Amino acid sequence: MVTDHKQIGEALLQVNNVSLSFGAVQALSDVSFEVREHEILAIIGPNGAGKSSMLNVINGFYTANEGSIVYKGISRAKMEPADVARNGVSRTFQNIALFRGMTTLDNIMTGRNTKMHRNFIWQAIYIGPARNEELEHRRKAEEIIDFLEIQAIRKTPVGRLPYGLQKRVELGRALAAEPELLLLDEPMAGMNTEEKEDMCRFILDVNEEFGTTIALIEHDMGVVMDISDRVVVLDYGRKIADGSPDEVRGNQSVIDAYLGVSRE
Amino acid sequence: MIYRETGQYKATYGADQQLFPIVQDRYFFFAFMAFLVIYPVFFGSDYLFQVVLYPVLGLGLCALGLNILTGYCGQISLGTGGFMAIGAYSFFKITTIFPDLNILIIFIFAGLISALFGILIGLPSLRIKGFYLAVTTLAAQFFVEWCINRSDWLSNYSPSHTIGAPPRELFGFLVMGPEAPGSAKYLVMLFIVAVMTLFARNLVRGRIGRSWMAIRDMDIAAELIGIRPLFTKLSAFAIGSFYIGVGGAMHVMFNLENVDPEAFEIFSTSFPILFMIMIGGLGSILGAYMGAAFIVLLPVLLRNAFPFLGIDIASHVIQHIEFMLFGGLIVFFLIVEPAGLARLWQILKEKLRQWPFPY
Ligand SMILES: Nc1ncnc2c1ncn2[C@@H]1O[C@H](COP(=O)(O)OP(=O)(O)OP(=O)(O)O)[C@@H](O)[C@H]1O
Ligand SMILES: [Mg+2]
Image (cartoon, rainbow over all chains, first blue to last red; front, side):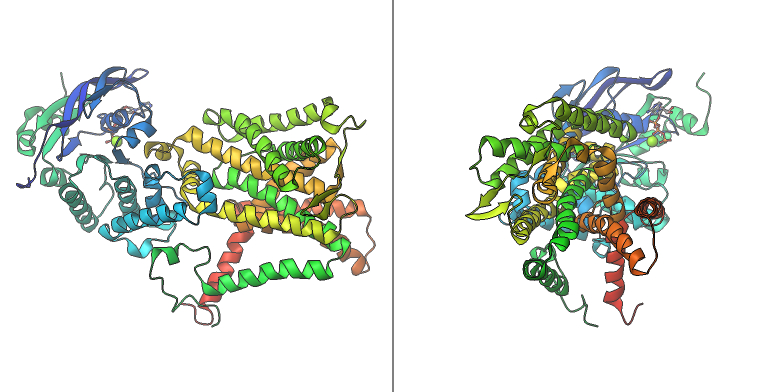
């Protein structure tokens, strides 16, 4: 389902000939693709294909051995993850990486931390500027809580939440930063059908309402075909296909990769 | 029935973000604060001040500082004694050089010097974590002890490097030194502790506090959402050490009054303060004081309990019993309730809130 009123624009992010290895393991070899403004791009591929590693390179968490990342027209070989985040890239993780000791609200508020600027003296005094800032951001956090329909667990420490809800809170934390590019690493893994449908709806809504560009990794082909505008397929660290869902579905090497046909 | 949250609706986020969202908590807190001011001033004995109140306030503030660093930001430190020594010796030096300077300002400077040292010790924390970081802080502790024992200047050339509390006034009242009335020292301590605790409470519920906890809970995810690990850890080292420095200076200047470097030894200070936050509750402000009260009071109770029951026990035996009890309790809290006494208190309140109809 490609929404017709959506304006897909220029490339927001370009991955140029990126290679990454861990010792003898070649996680990515010479991968190039682009993520265009306002689109939903799915990155798929068998286990160990290098999908998560790709996101980690975009994030600045891994540094590519070769190649470069161009984001908003600015090329970089190396960048601190915190700076990447401050430039408008948010993400969720394959294995949930929430702040377990903190409540749902605090997790989401932490996602807005980089948008808050009062120094620690104002914060220690609290009354006045720091309080106003806190309340202003609380209002934004509550919008996200309403959007994701998690009002009831606002004050619950996230460590006590069931898996599906934790995934949702993690999405909330990523959204809190009001990203331009949202990277989702298997947002629906381990969910039941109903939870998956909810998550799909949220992802589509984020994309349509806020115009957020989304790159997501997903194993469920049904979901991928449904929500993505374009699909990039990785296999053994190489890009083997790139195109619309229909093109990719009919691509012979993709079928082979998924059926486990030998590459030789 | 009396302790109820029901019916107290929050119409604004401001109301929901208050320190005590539940009205009864607020009343209880103000009543308790009033009691803390009034009772000791009118009925406090030297024994009450010196054995209970001064140590709980002074060491409690140190425990709060360590809790900021360890409980909130997850950076283990065994160097608490060293930072207390820095605070105390800094206070002593500044007040001998500037005898007329307001002591509140000197406490701030003592804290700042400790904070600077904290930043230095925190620098390796970007690369090393957990056990190895703890060893670094231990090295800092020994380094401070060594410096104090080496430098005659720091103690004004006292032969055993001892420092003492000089007589000092605050707003025309004598509040420091052997001649100062007990309640005057107490009120100054209580004031400093109350203000600093309020500040700490505000910090931990705001942006900085969330950054600390994010680093503690999952440092990689924190980094990937834009939190700078080094800056955040160093801010916890700086602010935590500030609190420990001020706490150490107060503990020495108001309570011990005469100390040699041995008073800041790892076994007599660093470890007990670590135990305070472990028993009181990691990552809890109330817990720091509950832990301090517990560790200060337990030996007092033990020492009084046996004679009271008519059992004749040598004092060194009581000390052994103390050690065993502390050991047992720490193991208990580590395994059963890592969130400590503060969490038990919270559970009690939750039970009370539902009483008499729990669902
Ligand atoms: N930190 C690391 N150190 C060593 N090897 C790694 C590291 N991270 C990933 N790898 C290796 O790189 C390859 C790609 O891993 P990656 O996690 O990117 O795959 P993936 O496509 O996300 O797989 P999955 O579908 O299982 O999540 C794998 O062979 C993996 O073992
Ligand atoms: Mg993966």
